[in-house]
Length: 383
Image (cartoon, rainbow, N blue to C red; front, side):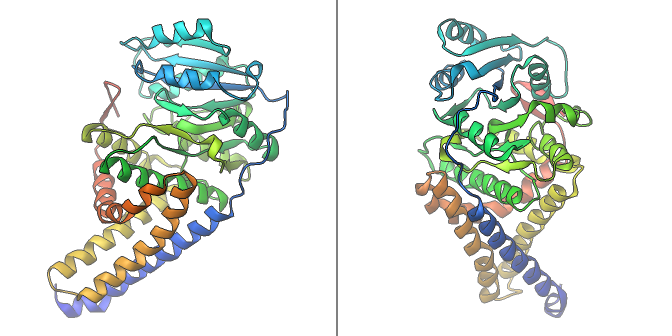
């Protein structure tokens, strides 16, 4: 590859991609800051919530979540909790039954049939919704923790907006290691970009660990019909279907009381499996927006790797590489810093530069790894 060949088209192309990404990041920051915090909760007897918690082998975590639900400020007579036990082989069911006997909450343990399925979580949610009494469905996971104002905040948002679907924030619990902080920064980028896209009117990302939607809206879009065969995507595929039917019906709940926390992965294998599961959804998107966004993010990060390789082989000077690096990283710092501050993760802001070094390789790696669809989740091999 000659220097003339590089200068004639590759360098202008790299500049175009990275500068467009810089503008894109500033736009995300604008829409993130534009999201208004949730208002004050107004008591409304018409709102009855069904909390759905799909679980499998969560004996170490489920008790903590159920205790959190027992402490909700939202009236206990206005919500129920359905624990959908997907054939746990540990003490999960025993713990749930023991807590249900003394809980103030209307708590039910439902054991799913031990039959093969390509998407265990979607089956759990569909089964729960068929039994749900609530007009508002709220989902979370068995390894999560919630604030005492969690359901109250979701109900306030629903009452104020008449939203068909509400995406809410998720972050990791207290960080103790470098990898914890790096995961927190990465997760903040997903939460923030998803929230900004919703605010801009182009819903793309959300997280099933903190999601709410009308039961009727779920039924009207035929639930998971058409995507039931895909192992992951119980959250985003549903959001895309609801957004297609109700373009203004998707909202992001920007309220610290509504933040759900979970544990960061403490081993590479678990991290790899989760990220591969997430990345595997890209090629199944029916909406063009999230698919194009995934391809665009891949291209931007790949462009930075290419510019780094050109610099390493002496084909471009350090000024060019540092200019591109700054154009990408400085807007990211501004955006991620504001999201991490909202999530009360100010300590993790210091780890943004390390994440920015790793992230281009990470995005490209998982973008390619997802092309091999099989992965393992909760002791099961899924496609």
